[in-house]
Structures are given as C-alpha cells and as structure tokens.
Image (cartoon, rainbow, N blue to C red):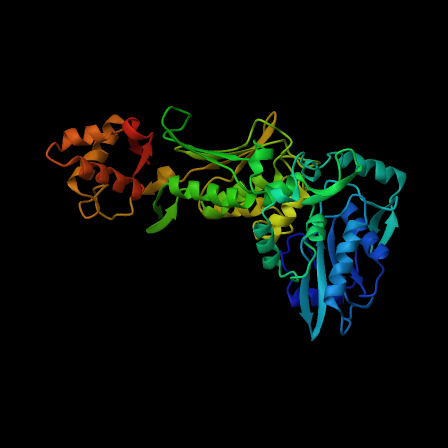
Length: 474
C-alpha cells in the first residue's frame, strides 16, 4: 500500500491493510510499552528518511493490543518528539478503532528541514529497521537540509501574553486534546514556543517562536511587519492607476480566509459554453485559488523583511507571489513530486486546522482542477528572490448569466443603471456627477444607491473614497 498520496486521516480499513502488510521503511509498528528513547529514535529515523506512519499500541505482528491507555500513550509520544535534537514537530496523532481495540496513528512528514539526532545518534530507516547514517549519508543529508528554520527562532520582546490563548484553546479543542493538557508543553511540541534563545542557551521563561506569533499572536505584525498579504485588483491586463487594494494582516489562518474572500469578491462570474451546453462558472476554480494562497502562506520565507505576499488580479490572470525561492532540493521541474517543508511548525498547525493535507501540498490537485475547468495549467516561476504562481483567467470565455441578447436586461437593472454601464463601457469610468448629468431629475441619494447596487451586483468596482470616488467595470 502506497503512502505518497494518502489523505490526512487514515481510515480503519487503511490501518488494517498497513497492519497486514507489516512494518516497512515508511511504516513502524510499535507496542504501547515501548521506551521513550526507542520511540524517539524511530521518529528521528523516519524524519531523516522519507517520513511515514507510526502505529502505536500494536504487536510486531500487527495485532492491536487490548486495554491501551491512550492518554498515557499520547503523553509518551509528546515526550518522545521532544527528545531528538531539534525536537520533531508532528501533526496531532489520530485514534483509530480496529475491531474493538484502539490504535494511535502518528504521521511523520517527509521533507522536513532539519537533520535529527537522539543524544548524538543520527539514524535513518533501512527496510523496517532503524540504522545509523553513514558518514557519507550524514554529510549529504546535512547539505540537502542546510536551511535553518527561521520559524523556530524566538521572537525578541515577545512573551506568552502576546499569544491569544483563546485562539490556542479553540485550536486544542478542535484537536480533541484533553482539557487538562499542559498548554505550554503542547505549544512546545508544536514549535510555537521555545525554551532556548537564538544563541541556543536556555531562556528564563518560555518564549513564542516566529511560528507561534504567526499562528496564535494577538498582533503578529507588531513583531513581523512583512507577514501580510497585499491584495490588488487592477482594471486591465497590467498595473495601472485604477485598482482596488486590501492589505491583510492578522494570524495566518485569518489571512488565508480574507485573501480568498478578496478573490471571490473581485473575480468575474458567468456562463461558459461547452459544446452545446452552458454551465455556470467563476473566473478561476476556487479550490485552485485556495491552494495557491495557502501554499504561499505556508511556505514563504518569513526571514525576508520589507516584502509580503502579493496577490494581484488582472483582467486575464491572477498572480500569487511569495517571498523566498523554492526551499531545499525542490525545483520548478520537480515541484509536483518532491516535498520539502521550510516551515514545519506552520505546516503542521495549518494541517490540523484543515488547510493542508498532511502528505502533498496540492500542486497536482491544482493542475487537475485547472484542466477540468478547461483552463491552462498553473504557471510556476522562480524569480530572483521569490516564487510566483500564475493562473490564467476564464474571463474572455464567460458570457452573461442572462439568456437575453442585451448584456444588462431591463429585468435585471433599471434604465439609469443601464445608462451608467453603457457610459462606463464608452469612457472607462463613471462618477456620481456623471450619472447625475445623465439623469438630472433624479435625487442624488437615488444616484448613489444606483451605483452602490451595481457594486453589490458585481458589475462595477468602486475606486477611491468621498469626492474622489469613481467606478469601473468589474
């Protein structure tokens, strides 16, 4: 059974197949009474290899053990994940019921950014066993994973009070962690706080890491000003003076939601003709937009200051630019198949929150969804200091949702609104004064409502404010 494209949660049937197939390079079967050291070594060996799944509470022959204390086993797993140097950040374990017995499943991601050791011992997987890395293997692995994780660095001047504990609590509730769970230890195991300074020396008090501030901070941009998304919608196919802009801050999960909402509010909708059929559609497939945004958030280089993620919408395309070139051994050519997580803590928490599947970052899904929508595949480009994803628009192929010949039929708009849209098509923009001149006998408040209604109907976009306000076609 392959694990390269499995979904985030293993089903009981999948666990049964793994138990039946037995241990392998990417599957470890371990009993409930395993020592913390042995479990830590298995986690480190998998992390140094290709990742995989550890099933706890089973015999060497793959038989689930009865009466396993799951709370005790989960505590053991947390302690074992903290034993390697550096600690291994794991997604939350999963309890799977098999024939009346409970098995604890934990996923070790592939492509982690560090080389892990347990008390100086560097291990890897060979078949179904752990073995020491040879000197040549260790040297090569250190070269491949040479990037130090900026997300794990302590944030200067930040304290635990700078974390939104209500948000942390909701996160742990979503994971189903026991109410008596030690919050500090849980945050420590997820790389959100640290007890060591940037120099590696112990700190007097646990301190939020970059990842912790970005995921749970009360005001992340107070410490990391560039950790934002700049969203801009231009009227044409190039940057110009007519645009709508929104700067999005806050925690990463909220940034993802707001950026997606910006695209939804500013992209075109209509009907596409396919053969003899007409189907309702949007300018871009929403799952592809979501993947592009979340990937940029999860994998950008947050050590780069002065530049945030840029989401730019044009009349013919959407671009998402992320600061930082592709990490590790990933290239534009192998991006569909290779995995390397620059921000393992951020990826782990976003995975727990449902934004990322635990295996695979969605590149293949993006390509498939664009093809299904009849659009060109996403374009991936590495720039001098970053990475850009471009989605080509379906806008030119979209037609009005109305069956009538007129673009804006009377049943949809009043006469003033039709006149306003015709004016915009001819002149490129319209102001309140322009529409007032077209309908001089109409009250100014009615004129304002007419234009506001066209914005609500996704036909116009409002630019500027107060007396400088004007409107352009969406």
